[in-house]
Image 1 (cartoon, rainbow, N blue to C red):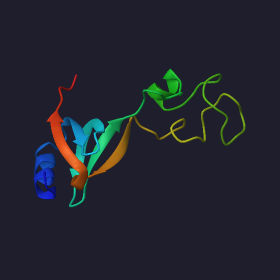
Image 2: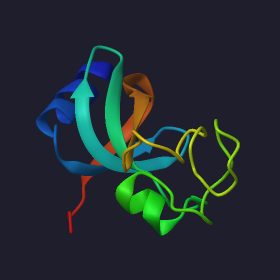
Image 3: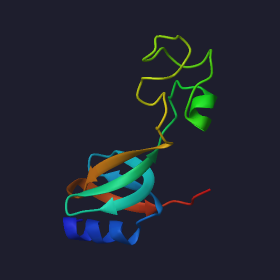
Amino acid sequence: MDIQQAQSICKKHINRYVEIRMKDGKTYDGIVESVDNENVYLAVPKGGGSRSSNAERQFGFAYPGFGYPGFYGYPGYGFGYPGYGFGYGRFARLALPLALLAGLTLLPYY
């Protein structure tokens, strides 16, 4: 697949949940956010191996007894570490080069 074909396929699937296969065999799943001349940008769900508490994942902050020490030095408050404080969502942005794209599969979104 050349770059123009990959770009065309990715543009057709913007805002869709897809699985992307790369030429090196790696696969990524996420929502196609945008496409430019060199990359496709996916919104990839965070989580899996995350060590953050349920309160942090659900509400974006930690209650006492959860999380890690932060800016204020109070143990148990999840302020100050990337992914463990305010302002971090459930998705991370991932840029993948179109030149290495081997295939794209539309996945069901539940």
